[in-house]
Image 1 (cartoon, protein in one colour):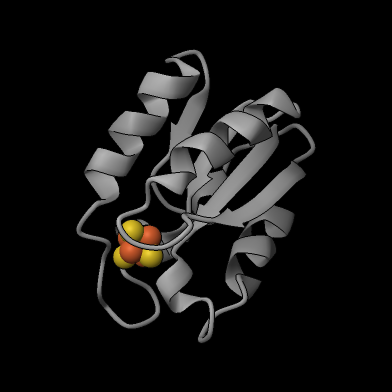
Image 2 (image 1 turned 180 degrees about the vertical axis):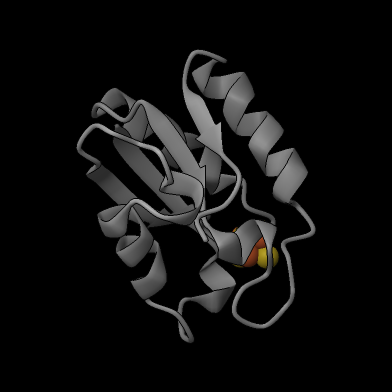
Length: 110
Ligand code: SF4
């Protein structure tokens, strides 16, 4: 699995993605059951509200080999402050529209 990870820019100051990397390394949570090696192609932010830059950033990670785009839990679950992104669904739809449905999208990390 070649992962392109997208995170919330608003939470960068409070979370450097430690748990995202831990669950990928340990193949837990969203990565439970993945048997192949997990390679990280990129770790980017959405670019700030309303997240439009996530579309081009996802496409660039696919261009560089990502077969899976992951929206980190800061986006979809609101970690670590319990404040989910109000644009998450639109962001996801726009990413799928750009990169196509053959690329797997994971909705959270942990
Ligand atoms: S668009 Fe969503 S994910 Fe991006 S910074 Fe704003 S709240 Fe965070």
